[in-house]
Structures are given as C-alpha cells and as structure tokens.
Length: 117
Length: 111
Image (tube, rainbow over all chains, first blue to last red; front, side, top):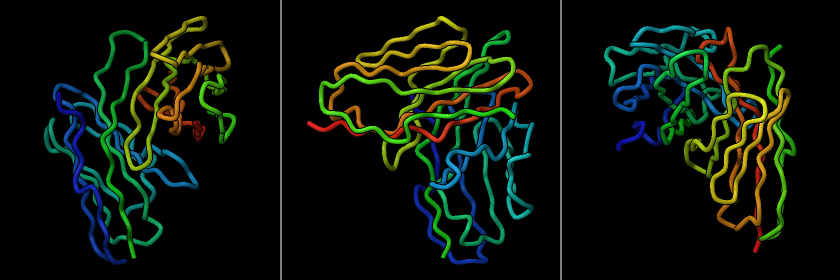
C-alpha cells in the first residue's frame, strides 16, 4: 500500500522565488492536511481539506501562502514570494474519518525540506 | 486555550531501563489522543490512538494509557532502535479534524 507521497523531498531556492510543494494522499482518504515543522514552533497545521474543499486555513501564516486541491489525489502548497523564514519541513497528511464522534488517524508523508536562501 | 504539553523534553536511557513519557492536555471534548514516533529526516509514524479514559494500547515494548487529563507512553526494556522523538497530539470537539501537537520528547537509548 502506497502511503502519502510528497515531492520534492528537498528544495533549495532563493528569496523571492516561487515554491510549489506537492502531495498525493492515500487513496480513499477524504481529508488532507498541510503542516509545517520547525525547531522553534514544532508541528503546526497550516490548512486542511475535506473532499477537496478547504475547511480551515487559519494556520496559513500570510497571503504569500496558498493551497489547492484540484482533485482527490493531488494537492499543492505554494509560497510566493518565498522568504528565509519560510525554511522548514512541510508535511502532508491524510485521513479517513471514523463514523461518529471518535477521532480519526492522520497518516503523514515523508515531508519536503525547504531552504530559502 | 487548548494545549498539549509533553515531558520530559529529552530522555536518555540505558538499554533495558524502562521509563515513561508524559502528555498532558487541556482541551474540551477529547475525541482522540494520538501517539506518533518521528525519526530524523522522516515524517511522523502513527503508533496509537486512545479514545477514552482508562483505555490502553500495546505494541511490542510500548504501552499507551489515557486518563482524563493525561496520557503516558510506557517503554519497557527499551532498545537502541527505540531512539526517536515521540509526539503526542489531540483531536477535540469543535476542532473538527484538527490535531494539536505537543513539542515531543526526544528519546535516546544507549547500549
């Protein structure tokens, strides 16, 4: 079974450039999440989608960040223009909701390590 | 404010020396508490989900327990390959499917 797939695994870019990160969720999962991980702030949720529709983007740091999910098997996170403080590891995760009130498990991809010079 | 606190920040054990990691939470309406393991350069790997106080789950040398205010991850007779960062996260009513993560505990097991 293929897990969550992310590309690229590493990205080095210069300040001001556009960066696009890609994610393919686990087949059949209805929810897709984008996280950012830094030493200072740990794992932070940026945005999540349900059935390709953005549900909560309150974690997106500023207008330079945008995310799309054009279909059930693909999502992008774009940073334009990029800044050095955007350097972090970006993770994508997906989940298949349980019925009822019980919480559902998120499965994470390997991450994209972004370095903005 | 909804919060998840893990302790200790770092833990060094000798191989075979059992110990426990703590995750305390202040959320209203817990829907689930999740434990993940993260190795350097990799994504968090799911370990356990606990849904209600009193619940316990086990996997090899790991055992997770849950009370109304905290969870423990017990590590029995650890081996060097158990070295990793262990992350705790909670999902709560009103948060829909959002996870709030703790800062993690960095575990190092030495031979």
